[in-house]
Image 1 (cartoon, rainbow, N blue to C red):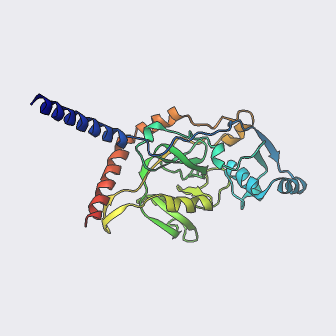
Image 2: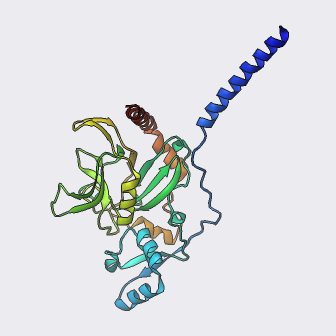
Image 3: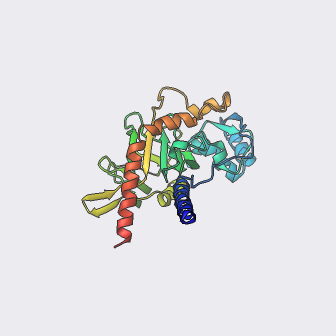
Amino acid sequence: MNSLKHTVFLIIISLLISCQNEKEVKKEHPVPERKYDKPQDFTYSIWSLKNDSIRKIFKSKFSGSEITTIVSLNRIDKSTLPKADSLIVPDKFDDDFLAYSPFPYTVKNLFDVPKIAIFSYPIQAYGLYEYGELVKWGPTSLGSKAHKTPTGLFFTNWKGEEVQSTVDDEWILRWNFNIENEEGVGWHQYELPGYPASHSCLRLLENDAKWMYDWADEWILKDANTVQAKGIPVIVFGDYDFDGKSPWLELINKPKANDISEKELENLVSNYLSEIIKEQENRTSILAEKATK
């Protein structure tokens, strides 16, 4: 009898340990923490493109991929490059654009959030995270002084490959992903001039807009007027100094001037985390329900 009791006791203990292990497995961080094996010690110089001869030297000195990096760091695109009179240029180049990121590679209080997009007004840049790990960053042009982009927490909803602007029907917004339906605010491809110039929206390079078009999730609708579940969370934060110089020019004297610390982002995210988790759980529930039908 004692032997039987001992066996039952061991089975119970084993089951309890197994259950505990299952809970711990569920809490595991699903994406390995990103670690660079190279020092992030970039320095920058200024190129003054004052005349055609200097522009010719500029074009011949740098490869196509290097020019792509340069225009991105200056928050412009190749269509607005001819208008630029001065540019910051890294003194060495890395084939991984994430290496230049002002966003932290890891944000621990996002470990339970599958996807989130964060837009910084002060440095005109966005960062995309999956389970707290940075997967992409790039330049943006947010709302102008007269038409500022609203800040706070939003969620992606509907999208369209080519959308006619509600402000001007001649404006065609490619790879548009709406984040504020009533105000018509969304991210999309459009000219990047090197400063906040949009009519409240979040302008992107075309390759970035297309990538994010496929990356983010749309809302789930019950019918034309009823939202069952929201898309991914989007945070727009901070203020831009419209009277100051472009903040990325500060990198010449202080290469880390635009960096956002993990602590800063954790503090920002903590303001919205409960709502993000609530909407995330609702979406998971709706998708599970649909899968059983």
